[in-house]
Length: 431
Image 1: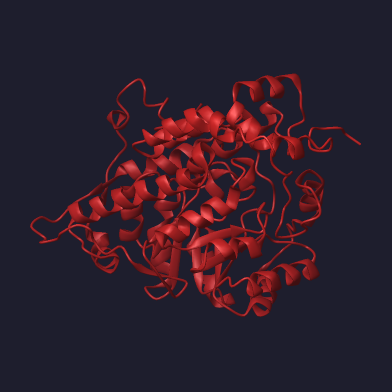
Image 2 (image 1 turned 90 degrees about the horizontal axis):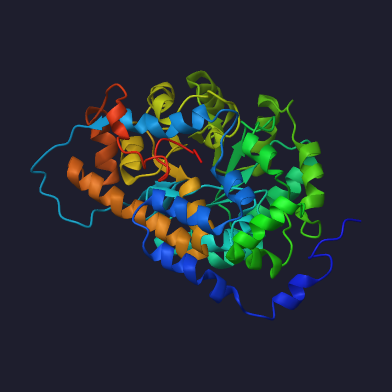
């Protein structure tokens, strides 16, 4: 047995010594000064262990898709109307999975949130409740379904991977139904594990392997480290709460089913019996097949550019997916979103709603619930401003008039003109 601080019970001692506020004071001050999502990224980088930040920040292989997914928005110009007679604040409400929400964007389901901050998924759920929008929970969450439902009483989507064990799938689906989840999202672009080379270089493990380099980094990031050492060890609480995350990692790898096909998806829909999204679609023919199979929603996504390198930017393929499935099929899109203008462009080009991943996770890593809320609030303000300036007063109006508002141009070196752009995260997930 490998000895580590949690197995020695260090967290039980440190949890009774409330020093978190002291260690987090500098992070709180930085968070208060954050102006945009790129600022939140830097706040997260300063607070989180390098291994953890790079896990969150990275893409696959050479990170071409990661940079492209973000930069693609800069090639889309917004040709706005004037004298539209609008007054702020605008009505940003819409429906997602048939349920009323106050915002057309939401926090995507992402694995292992307690890795970034001890409040984990609970922080994101509470922030989503405050904003009045949908919340997405991953089946590899480190907070359980029952707990999440205490913090978020509104519409929720439960994300599921392509597992081999059908009994496990039934068990997890039953928990989600009992927990009041309104919709299911089947992630279909995770049949192999993507090559994240930053993780390899950093020796990424859950929990940390306590190498010299990792311990030195832990000393440099006291807020994250005290958070980690004074909290209970991670578990993948939606699957097996009594199994620690490090032991469950091999179980998860053994459960991913590359052979999962359309027939399996049809069986899954029968077991769920409610609204369901096919998450990971980038091709029109797959979208059509998904609708024919019985999915109510197409979720255009490339897994945050963390899987197949040189997969397309989702904003680039979005119009073709909308054209393929027609006007009545719900479409969610995620990928590369870092500005309210990005959300505005996605809604204009065919999305009914937009998922955000890295922005709210940077906020979480930077400052827990308040960091997530700050990320969502920044995007809300930016979207409100963008819709007002483009001349559309509601989400429905933006979707109806959208194609005529967005025009493509070529990339320019002037898009990121100053030498500090890379430091601020512009141009992609570069370190």
